[in-house]
Amino acid sequence: MQKRPWIIGLIAVLIAVSNMAFRPNFAPALEPNPPPGPDRFSIIAVDYTAYEWHLLTWKQKKLACTIIIDHEGMPLPGEVYRDCGKTIYQKWITQPPCIIREYKSCEGYYAVLIRSEEKEKEIAMQLAPASAWISLEDCEYVPSASTNICETQPTLVIRGQEPLPNESIVQIAGTYDDASFDCNETDVCKFSVPETDEDGATVEFWSYSTYGDSSPVFTAQVRVQLVDEGDPDQLYWYVDVLSSQWQGDAVATCSDLWGVFPPVGGAPEWLSTPTQIEELSSDIPYTYLAANLILQGVVDASSCPDGGLDPGGNVVNQCGLEKSRDAVNEWQNQFDELILNTANETGVPARLIKNLFARESQFWPGIFQSGGDVGLGQLTENGADTTLFWNPSFYKQFCPLVMEAGTCEAKYMNLDAEQQAALRRALVGSVNATCEECPLGLDLTQADFSVGVFAHTMLANCEQAAQVVYNYTGDLPSEVATYEDLWKFTLVNYNAGGGCLAEAITNASSRGLDMTWENVSPYLTGACSGAVDYVNDISK
Image (cartoon, rainbow, N blue to C red; front, side, top):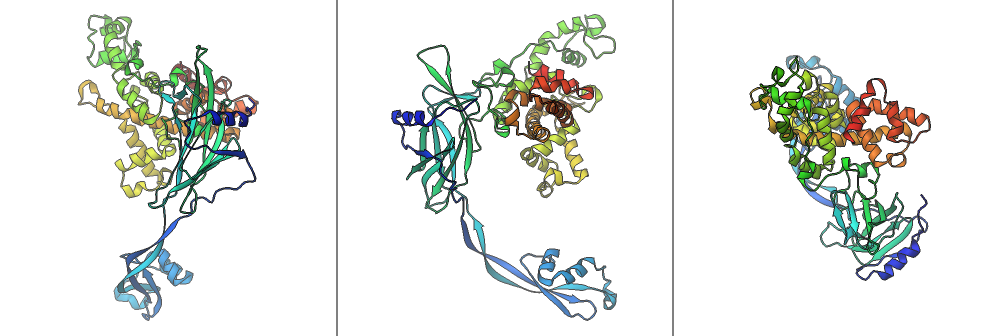
């Protein structure tokens, strides 16, 4: 869709807006003249202890070099290289151990601490940079639709922030859809934005400080769509903003990562989060759940043929299903409040989480038929690997629960194979509610904890699915797929793995097909074919 000319309309709107505190000056974009960016350092004096070491030869106790370090203990290899040079360093790190009583025949060097002295040194410390933030004014965020609704022309607000005392923001500047703007002698810039096409308009913005530098250049994608809700006297603007500097309510999960807006007016129902817990309630007669409730004695189906279960004891019969109906309904809704809270905390849609649990485990949070699939969302070790690799913020929180904090300073990919395996096993174990000593054979506290783990696992799959799309199409997700289709690709990644998703996308792309679910799903074949029904069930 062609973007609309907007300058004339924007100037007209600016004249009409009476509550605008600071009007920007707009001009066509000239030759690139980027702001300087952050450039702030401070020199500070630091007290420290200097330790002087001598490196002596074993044979003649001759001084080879002097090493000055600022920490206790022996000099580190890098410090030996720095102060003694390459030749001595290479001999030092390769020399064999010396038996003290035979030191006269030893090759190489030994280190002796000569003295320590209190000193002062100057170091350069980087100071916090200025920043700028973007928000909307006089608009209401609607959680159920995951969008902002404005009853009047939406006003975009860019606010500068200076973290240093005695300094302040003196100007906001940037570009809107390639036209330059600036607001002088202020730390707040407000302007009304016209309707855009479905791709939105690009905003670049930054702030200038009395310190003499500027903030980094930040970007935002702003979409404004005028909607007639049926009342000719009342129009509404749906407004969505994608930016790391957004200060409004959280955008639909993974939108910012993908650079893709949800559909105008909000995401489809299966990708929504209701405002009330009652809206998550369901009454589906789950047969696997019913069988487990009968097996654990929650439901008395003794009056039914074979105790309510088909021969073999793992499948409920019709009588058992009827007997367990009330218990099944109560059980499948007991996690709703936690799902809703988790959705609000992580942004993963509540209905997606609930549909996922329904499809994976029918809300029975144990081990499925003694396999490797565990918990409400049936996590496997491969799935745990995805979570820890593709969701680094979650890894940083989870790793110290299992290993020493020092070990966890390394990225997951940089751990050795044994450490990675230990983390994977621990993550799978954390979602396993099976407990032989507990009532019903389940620790429901563990099940509650696992809801957040599965939400973060889904975020990791958002990341990996985006990378797969880019790797096998050569285009950014925002250039080739819609918000809903990217979520379906994410579910394929979760259920069947990145290899299945990559193969299907490669086959569709090589045939010149658009990256839609309808075009990609036929290429999920063989061992990957089960992902088709999986995605269709969850996205109903």
